[in-house]
Length: 255
Image (cartoon, rainbow, N blue to C red; front, side):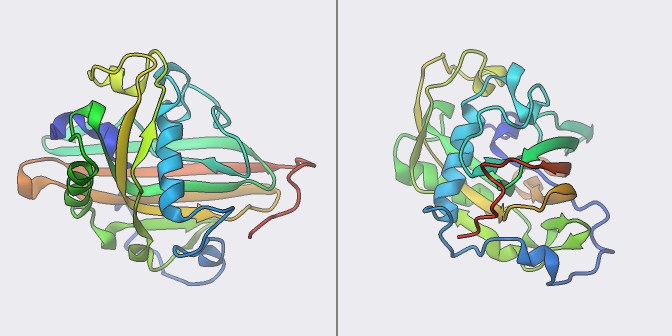
């Protein structure tokens, strides 16, 4: 794995300003689906695979995580996906920072699934040809995620115990890739129509449907590869979420 080209493999998030925030297990934590629960028929691990399939289903010029498309792009069903940013920049040698501050409109009744920090590996990216090779690589890099750096703040309330949110995905396949896909942008040979086996490992959250109105969401963490000659990735992702009435989804379904 060429670390310098692997920004697309990480949902990088930051340590910024979190040390001073009190950790409380009240409304914030109550809005998160437990890590060991099935939700709408799928486990966290299975949702993590779905999230990556969504990420790779869209071209970079029309992608919510490039801020080139509305959050609704590629979304369907009762669970929508959020994420980090692909526009991280090196602020000083060896330190890459990604910041995103988004305002999105979400129909009522939608749950939100997103990675705090995660790593992905795939055959088409040159990371291995077997599930064992792919999983060994993702587990190795995910071990450099600092659990103590993770943060998730919902409407100003920090969610505790985020170190419990780590899951390995099952082996999954993404694609067919669109023309102008993310991999092409980062220099991979990934023609339109290609597919690839893949796995991911990292920390995720499933947020139950929010009430109608305006909400704030902030999440982050860090991945520190300096001990193996790579960079320190830090990023701070913020969403202003406007939940609007949708008669088909007005019932908050938390099963």
